[in-house]
Image (cartoon, rainbow, N blue to C red; front, side, top):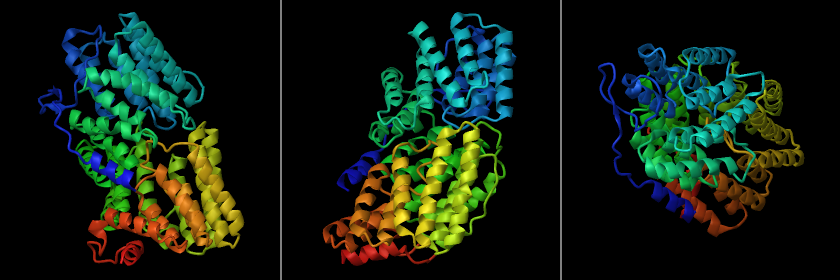
Amino acid sequence: MSRLLLTAVAVSLVASPVPAQEHQHAGQPAERLGKVHFDTSCQPGVGAAFDRAVALLHSFWYAAAIEAFEGVAKQDPSCAMAHWGTALAIWGNPLGGTRTAQTLERGRAAIERARAAGAKTERERAYIAAVEALYGGDAPQAARAIAYERAMEAVVARNPSDTEAKIFYAIALNASADPADKTYTKQLKAAGILETAFRRQPDHPGIAHYLIHSYDVPALAAKGLPAARRYAAIAPDAPHALHMPSHIFTRVGAWQDSIDSNHASASAAKKANSPAEELHAMDYQAYAYLQLARDDDARRVLDEAEAILARVEAGSGYGLAGVYGASAIRARVALERGAWTDAAALKSQNTTFPHADAVILFARALGAARAGRAADARQSAEALQPLVETLRSRAEPYWAGQVEIQRKAALAWALHADGRTTDALALARQAADEEDATEKSPISPGPIAPARELLAELLLEAKQPAAALVEFEKAMLREPGRFRSLAGAMRAAEAAGDRARARKYARALSTLAAPTASRSKSGSPARPDLVEAARILK
């Protein structure tokens, strides 16, 4: 655990303030969005407004970016690049899921306006053609993301001094990366481009933002700490900029840092009337609270999330983040606390996002199985199969695979509840291996319940503590600092007679949840694992 503790100390260092470029518009107070300059052939008088719109785009503030680009187009109807920006903002999060027909229609209309305006340079025409690759044809979205990446690569090749082209190319590399590629070829290529640019433009919001995405995998997370610390200071008025550092904080188990980042982000998103962004930040926030056993705080976030969800536009470019976040918070608050009856009682839902609906069914299945209700657990687990098929039919192979992992992990626990533990262990191991072969989506701080952690807990239930300890320790390499993994490792070591490791994990668990080690704010008892940790340490 020493490496984890050292990492947590490292990320707790306070970064020095970064002077952010201020944008004044429409009589409003100056915004701190970072420093961006994008050369265009548009009228000189719209240059500052265009730069502001690109800064908003780099911080994924899409509604504001669309409004800003449309404002530029009104000032200069001949500015074709204003419509390029609108189309890219309508597309939304480049790492997000399949776009709705409504989104595609809006984006294509913006591209038509760009073509009608008539770009004045070959470079601008290339930018417009590149974004058209995202919207064009009937190919699956993944294929169009690759086409966009290659088109941006061509823009860079023809315009080697265009830093903005390189930055947009870098995030396109991340968006088209294969989640199963454990060499992280595209992410590292993007990081190489961005690190060079960052040395020259340390106050650019897109560079810091996209570096975090490039390093948002367990093997690379530590490399993302400088960008994570800097981004929020570069663009403190952008809600997503306040949230993004928590992607790295989550990867290294720096939970209080994640809480602070997402509290600030959720507050900024509320102020900006961005409910989906608010729920996205709250999912990360609730996850971090639960790792520190701050269960009352997590429940408060859940209560707030339920009221916010009604304001999320499912068809918007960022709607998935909100719907998924709200679903995930419901599931996490039950599962992380071991409140199996609560998990089994979660109400199923039917949204436009099958992978968000799967979260609830997955939690229901695990809760029922842990409560000894094998039939109910199997029913919920089997209900995941149609969602897998729906996602496949929508050309969403990544999410189909993630829901299939959930189905296998949930069915394993249903089999165990039915007394078929040997079959259960085989299926749980398969789910764990499949999850290890891919990566989590940026839409989530982590799996709803990590498959390898579930395998370890199943081995512990099956009276195989030594094998369980091995799996808990593997799980912590991928998801460091998780309360349930630490608690499971402690119990497994104790059951296996390894007193030294039992004390090691008991000490780590007690340190992790020190502020809540006795009783919660509501006066409810501490989690049983903390009581057990205190006993072992005596």
